[in-house]
Image (cartoon, rainbow, N blue to C red; front, top):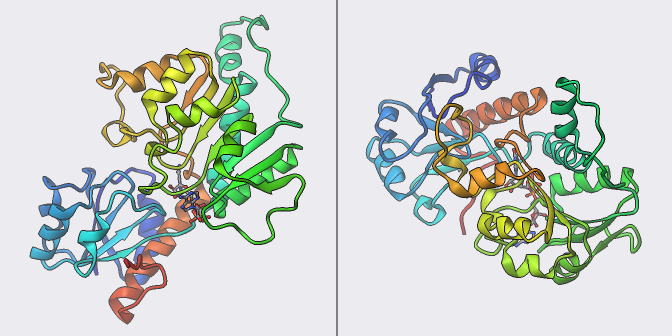
Length: 331
Ligand code: NAI
């Protein structure tokens, strides 16, 4: 089996070579992202392997079909970059539903602690032998209320971590997880209450039509002054312009973003030495109380191994058995 692998980064290859090698799946690695302009590179292959910022729209799907390709293996959990309606009946979509919820949840807490304890500032100051503490006052997490939107695999691990810090959790999910609400330190509430009572809000739901801009001007209006916004899920869950306005007005105390609405233009690439064209992203990064990482929450050794192992198994299952437990079934 020959698979065209798009948006390749050096850290992808070792684990895919390892699991592909023992399963008879041969990968050809392309650095470019998959889109209408690059799809022809997949000619002659049995399928494509894509990541979060590759484009699987109608035009790409049609061209894949014209080249006889019907396997799209996503090496990620989310699939908001796929035109699902158009994909139905045309391509088999495989994904990696869970590779390490710990990787993402731990990164979320790392960003929160870095932000509120000013670790990013301390790192730069002490390297310059500046040992002043001015402007470094943080706050305790113990006793604070964290609102968690999305209580799936990652959300629940993050809730466990927060409970370890002695925080109270207000949770919201369209489909509530059984046994999570203990009526005390973890309570399911409606979104309105979550916005009004949370000191910190963390997003762990998928990007859908319903969750698009779940954090916008109207929801921020309901929040406490000084609320901390954490987004390690998908960029478009947050209206970046509204967030920027909230930060300027001091309504938002801090923001930690591993994802950004327009990230596909920039994330995973080196733009140092260039003039960043996105004014909103540049302005957000310039804020002392905003921390941005470039969609790296998943990036642990454990997660990379799990991603490669599951993706290879998905491809083998669908080619050899015609079915795969991790196929995205479209209604
Ligand atoms: P999951 O599927 O286990 O959990 C998602 C939860 O969101 C479910 O409980 C679901 O019921 C809930 N949900 C669905 N629609 C909702 C709505 N309208 N309102 C509120 N909740 C809703 O997914 P998992 O593994 O926990 O991942 C969560 C998200 O994290 C993914 O969708 C993905 O976007 C993001 N992610 C980010 C990564 C990164 O590197 N930054 C890596 C992996 C995932």
